[in-house]
Image (cartoon, rainbow, N blue to C red; front, top):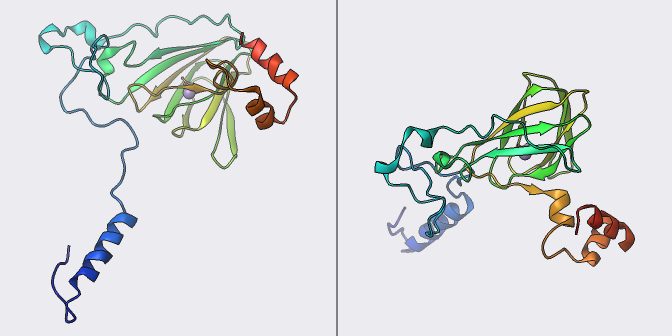
Length: 226
Ligand code: GLV
Ligand code: MN
């Protein structure tokens, strides 16, 4: 940074210009989980300590089992109004992922079923279809809708934070494996966020937001047991 005096002795003008430059062009920000500072850090998910992630289990107690997870091997329970199931392989279910900035889900969807519109605040998502015919779609912040019907072996990507869904448009059960650049991507599911929160979002907000009568809001809330 320049601190030399110029002819008029106003070196602070240069300093101010530099400062404004730094403020206008900040360093790139971190858009996914930070890099780990050690080989591994098996999450101690029961620890009372609250940090950004989980504290590491003592290395002396780490075993091979900490690096393997069979939670995605079984079909999820699709007996729910959406006819779908998401099984998470994230740091909460698989603590070996702690600090590594990655995780996966298994998504099972029955014929006609839907993994409802949702977003992941901390990750982009990619996925590969294993079985079935799936309509995958997302909506940008500019309200543009992108979608495609995918079949086994085909992949998709959902940019960070955008609302997206998968719908089974085939005759068979569908299976997708999804992956994220966060050990805990989080999922804000639009219908349940809005209509089944605790405590509930005021009816006035919902009637205004959706431009409908309260009876419509009551009916939707009722469907989600609220
Ligand atoms: C699918 O959208 C998933 O979040 O696993
Ligand atoms: Mn998703």
